[in-house]
Length: 429
Figure 1 (tube, rainbow, N blue to C red):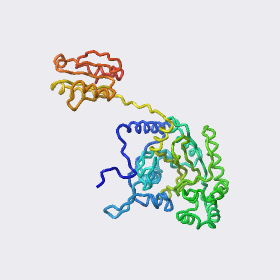
Figure 2: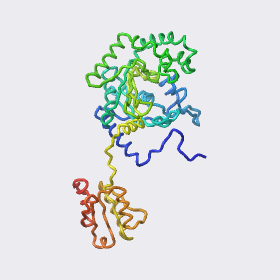
Figure 3: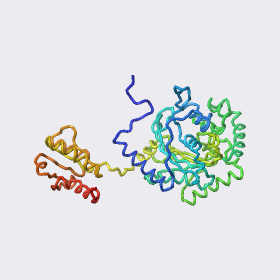
Figure 4: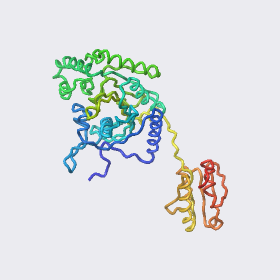
């Protein structure tokens, strides 16, 4: 029996959790400013949600999903991506009937994909995502991209590259699909088995192949941009114009297709250009998915969104040597000496906490010296010292660990005194 974490998973220990909390708080703050609301969906869904939503021809559905049968014989799948689950929730809860449209949503969620683990790519991954459902305005595409770029920039990540493309509407995609089949069919036997299947199911996915990306036919493949009809071309030009107006630089990559079947019109990726980041440079990716809500049984509802890997976000922070402003210091530590003082310390710690003071104490029966060392390790701003003599006099000593200054205050005034030192004098209720 293995007593180690499963391959492709990782424990996030307390020393690292503050980094995650800091990043998540910053991302939430950006979403609030952009007027997005949080949504939380189940960890697992009926398998059909992803088969219909993500697409049977995708690697996710064919190779990477954790699917199981429950005791009722129903096929369920651990969530491999966020968009289909949010779209399902949008339909089931009739959010399309809310007068406040479009629905602008964000989420933090764990995803599960069975793939070869490597740096920044786990089988259980943490993702931040954004979805906008209910508007086909190109300004929304630009806003979603702007939000993603703002998240990185406000965390101090500057070595970024935004890559965009248009996959066009259904008419444009169908014409491009025919051209791709004609182009690749003479080379079919030279392609990997996956691409041979994709050529019949979804030829656009051939362009996203990691095995055949150096094949000469890839370099001469017809571009989707050559097959955009007037409406699709105009839409893409408007998205680019809005990005330019917001001062967001971008590069058009005609081979950017993304790995999910539901995408159409705008597709984008944000990449790290930091030295030493690693071979897989993509930090976030997304695009428009008009038609997905209908596929899941809802009314005609356009949508766009992105997914951002939090593990890769933290890697980018490390690659750019960003030091986060983490508050790791403990407000105060209560040192008690003697049996009666120890009992009183339990009451005092409780009283301080319910009055807004962050405080801890010793629970291992250490001597005074050991308790001071513990306070140092916790980076305590203040130490409060209570011995049997102080208890008799109903006073307690408060010492500033920064200046070394200390004074005595009545135990009855401890809460007020600490509030004045730490919180600016909140009235004791």
